[in-house]
Image (cartoon, rainbow over all chains, first blue to last red):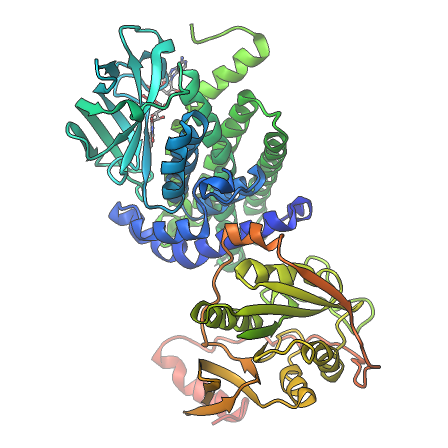
Length: 390
Length: 250
Ligand SMILES: Cc1cc2nc3c(=O)[nH]c(=O)nc-3n(C[C@H](O)[C@H](O)[C@H](O)COP(=O)(O)OP(=O)(O)OC[C@H]3O[C@@H](n4cnc5c(N)ncnc54)[C@H](O)[C@@H]3O)c2cc1C
């Protein structure tokens, strides 16, 4: 694997060891099957027990809740390696860790944490995160899903969620809903909803041309009744789900570079082997330029992740810094994947190679967790102090 | 059961090696190092025995400079209990010198089983295990591809050319591990965190003056480029002629 800037030298022994474990897992278990999974349009569920056994879920959460207690750089390296395999496999781990376990950890009661986190770390309970609605994507504050508190303290939830990763696989859904009669985003709260509750249905979203090795589902909640203990007590307002997204976006910034690395390595190897006009195509200036550009963006993106990770470990990173990294790295990765696909010529359109799969996957990653445009506006607001949203 | 596993830190074999300026060693720049695969299988074998025999302890021993602590910690992160670094500035090429230093430590441990890899790909001597067995006065079975321990006795399989040999041996014993014995587990993330807290002792190596030294290291001669004599059935007569007259293999 190329390490042009010797980033290994600024990783700790433990961080390298974590990366090596996930790298070996991806090489041995993900890469041999992922092309077929992609074509079949199925998430490789059979990998979940081993991912759990190795400790990938919620790996940066504390040991006392059954998690690995890693720092955030090590967590980022996990996402990088998983997405070197496939964005769908990384998405699964992102959702389980950053969008399901994190809110339980950050907003849950002690009982909820003790009950759910060890079982989620061990893969016994899989979760999904329901924020987006058919009519509210980039603007989740406008959501219409509503939870009403009953006299006995229980809640009844009505609404629909769309594009929900792990939606048909999950045993529990973190559902975000407005509460009471308040239509503003201040009333948004999170609930842990069992997916077998009466009135809860999940339907696989068919026809995807991207992230095909991932379960993306539509959720409908019709008079779904949950006990008072389903409410995540410390949630309050749109800020709560956005805090989860910051965690997930951090991992995505790393993950995108993993996908980019897979494409770069594939292109580099191909350029060395494919002979045309009597010499390897890597010997032609045009392809060298391609490779040089890819490598440069890869190194820049990885350095960005690493510094962001150190800031996160120091407890000083801001959501806007995460926006910059997500925006830059996913965009750079889509370009790298496309250039790799082109360098591969006709072979580049085959599932036997990975570049086109990554290229198509990254279009989802470009759109979810805040579209590229939305992160542009977040950065614009951060530097000008003027909001383009209102 | 008390089990010791001796492990070596070796360079990743998938890279292109360069010879160092001294002409007797490999240039270490840009190399990645990890536990020798054969040794990782030995660690795995020890851990599988530990899983079956409650109360067992697995000790991992490596001779070399401080960087070998990382190799020891890798075995600890897989699940071994404690580590010992036999500290030396460098690992000598002379297998007997290594075997002497290791057996000085091994003989104090009261081990029921001592495991080595069959060989390490960097020096390819394959002698350290059997030499240590000899120095310890213990029975030795080399290149095992299966292992069963019951009632103080062991049974192991060895792959021979076109046959398999099943051997039986008493404990304590020294075994060297071949490919095919098992697949080494990956260290889990929790295992990696736990390894930092496991005991790792550092002891000076008692290294005898090496009797064998490397005088010169050379890369193999470049292979000559192949030649395409033609395509399809039409090329066969010419190919046969060249194999007879030029290559002289027919
Ligand atoms: C594969 C996949 C998995 C997903 N998983 C989940 C999940 O697990 N949970 C979940 O809750 N959601 C999930 N999503 C949903 C995702 O977060 C949304 O698709 C995303 O927020 C964009 O919303 P939208 O699709 O409705 O696009 P829209 O918001 O309709 O945007 C359409 C276009 O308009 C642009 N745009 C929007 N607003 C502005 C503006 N103010 N100024 C300029 N341009 C603007 C956008 O950038 C985009 O180009 C997933 C999506 C995909 C594709």
